[in-house]
Image 1 (cartoon, rainbow, N blue to C red):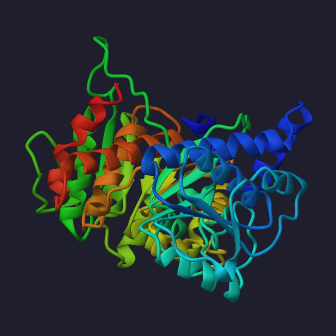
Image 2: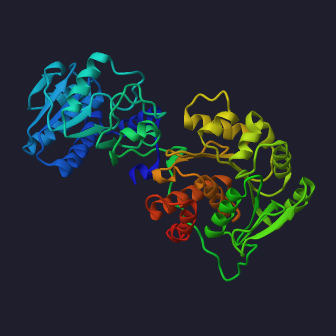
Image 3: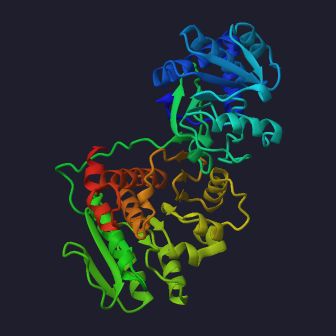
Amino acid sequence: MLNDGKILTAAEMKLAEQRLIDSGVSVDQLMRRAGQGAAQIIWRISAHMPTLVLCGPGNNGGDGYVIAQWLHDKGVDVSVAAPLDPQTEAAQHAKSLWRGKTLALADAKPSAQFVDCLFGTGLARAVGDDWFNHWSRLFAGAKRRVAIDMPSGIESDHGTCFNDVPIFDTTIALGAFKPSHFLEPARSKMGDLVGIDIGIAAQSDLVILPRPRISGPTSHDHKYSRGLVAVVAGAMPGAAKLTAMAAQKSGAGYVKIFAPAGFVAPHPSIVVETLSNVAELRHKLSDQRISAIVLGPGLGREERAREILTTALAADAPLVLDADALTVAGAQFMDLVKGRAAETIATPHAGEFSGLMPDALHHKLEDSRKLAGQAGCSILLKGSDTVIVSPDGKASISAQSCPWLSTAGTGDVLAGVIASRLATGVSGYRAAYEGQWLHSRAAILAGPAFTPEMLIDHLPAALQECL
């Protein structure tokens, strides 16, 4: 995986490149590695397709001149369009080696293939209308569109689109992936995402969510050592049932539901213990054999829900807070959660997150890190660009997603999967990323138009891939 799956911000990428330069690798060499590597990918995909390379004034434009010359040497009908002459020494050198034709941006005509090297990583504002109108005209006239490093008009660190960027067929990341390669709305503009290794070696607290390595039970294990998950049910019983079934199908050794009278177990192997008041719940949750508690799916939002939340937070066991539990906590979330001795994981979607952190900057990664640090818990901020962060700032972004997960009940399933992993004794951060990976993979295995119950049925196959 490119750069071992590490994701670098624009500033981190600049430092990593400088380290390479300080070690004796010239900027010209880096540009040649990047441009020739990208050109080889373009060649493998489209071979002799007539190509227009749009080169900006910076080093991204320099990469474009290298790409154009490499394709030209292969016999491709390739031309360059540029709004300005190169402004950096390395880009000027790359242009001096270009042997084909260069057109002014306004004079360029569309070609079958459009390669965007106008701006890459580090863009801080929208591309001006004059340039972007020509860019859009040339983009629209092409049959294939390739972005080099980052589509022009997209900021690299927060997933922000400065311009109304259309969807590319392919984006080729240079040296390392950047946050916007995976964060929405930018991610939806990238098309197929591939990477070019140019020798970058850098440390980062942000990685692509890896496939977990999970150990199966041994001959010495029993139902309690594999983890007892306690699901607290509330006003809407169906959600708690989905959570319990998901925990069972993703590896928990024992699953219980604590529920109001009249609750019917979803399966004979899932134990239901009925409660008549919150004091009984407090007693039930004091059972030291409980390895993880899930609170929120179907809880409801009435006054009793706040009592239940307070009771669960006071328990000694690790805790997954989801759905209604987060809505009930609201802006008091940080004060309620910080100081818990046991691991705590919160799994909000964007709407719930805004209630937990009303002053959020709407930068998904930074906001999640801030909340996790202040609350002292792990945060899994759901979406097609799910972000998972630990209290110390370590973070991962999910690279696999399934649009069919936009189905009622699948969030309840995710809470159960995470609880099953948390019940094994791993950290909250690890339980969250293991659960997220299993949930996404099960969705892919389930195929289109699945129900939450069908999703749950594919969890064992997803788990098998991690053993």
